[in-house]
Amino acid sequence: MPTIFSDPDDIVEDIIRDVGTRLVVGLPLGLGKANHIINALYRRAVADRNIDLTFFSALTLEKPRPSNELEKRFIGPVIDRLFGGYPDLDYANAIRKRELPDNIRVNEFFFLAGKWLRVADAQQHYISANYTHAASYLLARGLNVITQLVSKRVVDGHARYSLSCNTDTTLDLMRARAEGRASFKLVGQVNAELPYMPGQGDLAGDEFHAVLESPDVEFPLFAPPSEPVSDTKYAIGLHAAGLIRDGGSLQIGIGQIGDALAQGLIARHRDNAAFKATMQRLAPGVAVRSEPFERGLYGVSEMLFEAFLGLIEAGILKREVDGTILQAAFFLGPKAFYQSLRDMAPERLAKIQMTPVSFTNELYGDEAAKRRARVDAHFVNNTMMATLMGAAISDGLDDGQVISGVGGQYNFVAQAFALEGARSILTLEATRPGKAPSSNIRWSYGHQTIPRHLRDMFVTEYGVADLRGKSDADTIAAMLEITDSRFQPELMRQAKDAGKLPRQFELASAHRDNTPERIAKALKPARDAGLLPMFPFSSDFTDVEQRLIPALQILSAAVKTPSKLCGLFWEGLTSSPGANDEACLARLKLERPATMQERAYRLLVLAALKRSRA
Image (cartoon, rainbow, N blue to C red; front, side):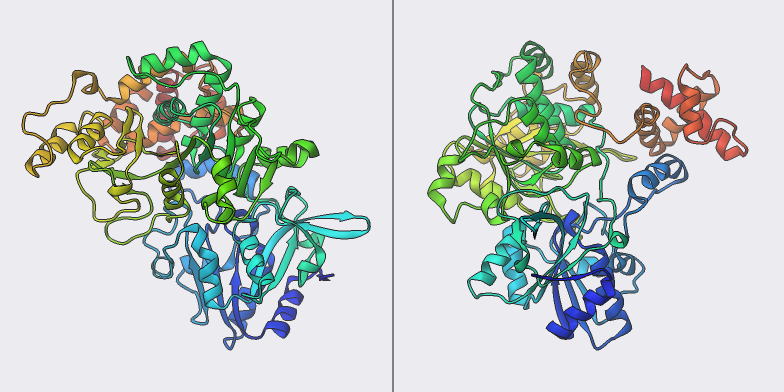
């Protein structure tokens, strides 16, 4: 059985006595980090520069950081409410302050999107890797410690521990250890809030070298609140929902578009007539899959998140493979999501299996069984930008700055080409907001995540571009059809000047009205009917906060254009508070403004609240 510790400093001393002063420590991606042990290791290496410490990880979670005064007034209480007891990771704070000692290195292969942009140490130590390759890189580095947050259960008087939220690389590394290809100490930290997940990650105590367990080191799980789903994201999700085959398999990537897709599938299943009507307004004359899910779907996705539970509840995710309806490698979500997993009946929870990432993201290893299971698979993932010739830019910029990481995206694109009947669906918003909005569909770009020879399907709010097997000219034409109309003429000119599009080519009139206003108009009846709620699954925001969110989004967009901001300010001068506006103003502490700045904020918020109700 493992040695049980109640003090993180003591467990670190035990690790050093057993392993030595050269520490190569694997940290799980995202939620499963044992923060107290990690911080104790960091403090010990800061105090003793003879210790050589490397953390190898991905997705370091940090509390949100407000960027302006009004955002601070809104999100500050939310941060206190949701993250008040969450212990910050010392190494992350040191990197941001440029105070990381020379004897400590932090290598990550996936960033929280945009959070480490222009942070030199993080950018320089980033390792570009497919998710499935991370374990092999750790082994090559000489991994000798894994620290992981675990859930505990006592069975017949013996402690068992669940890897719970992060079976991903840990199970692959444990297999390497069992085969004699690795030697490391597995060290756990018990967290009572972590759901106990059955399956391969349910481990006997003797798999662990040591376990940290004490009320003093309990902390609330990192629980990012669900974000509101915009019209743009709903349009993308609905288009994607019209591609999924009943009886097939489904993978969904991170983000609100995943929520929008799941809600679109639920609407298609539960309110079929309304779904068809919405799709007809959104894409007139376009044939989409709209049948309800009689056979249901089987889920195989590196990430499990709340939308999947919504699909299970709706009776959509129900096609069983060896008694399982969903297999995933890690999870992350809001508090309600964790509570749902903790409260789920054992027989239902057993149908959700946490597996190694090599299982979800690859076909090798029992390939025949995977092929039988993953019929009609659709792999839906987000990308930031795309080129007219079908390359995808998902993880970084053309100056080398990393936004997030490749993660599993390339794995899933490759699977889509390897499996019969499978498709890769890459989703993106057609435009990027700013003082001068820009197109996310480019003629070319100096960085690529998915090369154009693997082009398959792209989806924007304006429709679907099916590119598989198409010529360059036909690919460009299809991509122009899902481009915002403000940018179509210039992109078309560039393609023609390059000799990749015939000079006489013209877009059909049906694709010349690709505007945000058309999308909003098409979705409004479904929005008004409650078919497309702002938060389709759960929300940690109060009712007042939910009323404020659309208004603050309007204000945030107006700030980027001085003329729009002035118009909003004038509208505030001539507006009276609505029935619920006072509660919103009080939430931002603007009910009795004491300064000129607060008076200006009050007027802007009033105007934005009025517009949000229009």
